[in-house]
Amino acid sequence: MGLKSGITPSILDTTAGLAGDAFVLATLGCPVTLIERSAIIFSLLANALERASLNEKFQTILNQGFQLINCDANDYIIDQLATSAEAPDVIYIDPMYPDRKKTALVKKDMQILQRLHGEDDNSSELLDNALKFARKRVVVKRPIHAETINQKVPNTCIKSKKTRYDIYTIEKM
Image (cartoon, rainbow, N blue to C red; front, side, top):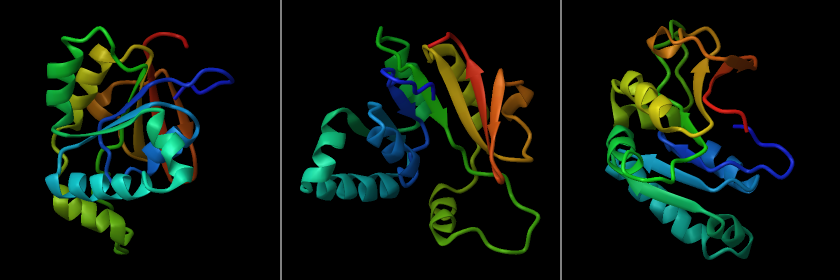
């Protein structure tokens, strides 16, 4: 994401899901805007944020910039960022992972997300739009062996055992 001592980039999480990644980034001091297209998942997140705001520990994190929006991320990018001078430093994309060849099921929370979202069919368009409007970089979370979206070659990758972060640098931080 470009976090460094004294640098806490603004982040647009275009695929909020259950907000785990966004919460980690917010605890590190980044202002985060979450976009969630599913009305059901949005309602669950809104309720969780409302309850978290009652806890003193979470109030600081939420008050520094933690905004939740219910819409399609492509629509938000085109409607809001194209007409605003204040684009986020980083646009983060964590699309549904492609089907696995393994017989074991994914974790229950991911099964629920997959059922609510259905097939992920807009990550290609989302990457193209993100690359147009992010100020500093676009970060895409992928399974370690998955192809890149749109066959676009990232500037760099960060890999772990099962996950890869493709980083498309627009401007140095």
